[in-house]
Image: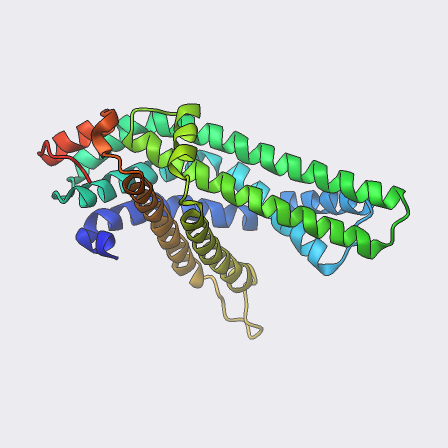
Length: 306
């Protein structure tokens, strides 16, 4: 809250000009392609689940539909995510760093300049993070199909197959959460330090030692907030009438704004988590120069950010 209140104008600009368009693309893409892409992909996932021995319960159907919608939205909105969202994360990282430095926040032009300089490093790290998430998801699907198919071949009852599937989902959730935490922290490192790609992710793993539980709490809070807004969008906007003909479309911009605000808080918390990890390891921010020195020059001070 203190960081957000330090200069609400900078964060408001990031919210409206960068995050709102990206959030709109994420939320609207799956809704717009519901019949053309989401439902066919969901049916294919259900067919694969049935072939592997999973009973097509309501939970399995909902999971397949949610996974299909997430995949479609991620692919369709990737250009907006790769540009607007990364620029927003870079700007938020520099703004929070200026607050931690105890210096006046950067002007809009200076913040934009620093964000553009950091974007190549952040883009390389984000591309590697996407590859890591895809590998994690592919491993989960392969393990799920293999485990369920093996149990079905061994003539185990459907309840045992469902239990094996639930255990696989639980293991995937833990691995996915750790992957997202490492990737988010790696993105912050790519902005505030002069490293990118594998080096940034390796650095994030080193910084997270002893602070994983904090990252998991941040991830859990952000996931719950985003899922809540997505659920509201699903039930309040995609269904276009209340039953008496009145439209719910007016709620769409409000939910997009709410979704963008949760994403802004998530970006800020990732930066706060970065500073927490560094302070816990008794490190000083300007040890590795690069962008930190640029930040110090832009805010007009040569003092160390603590």
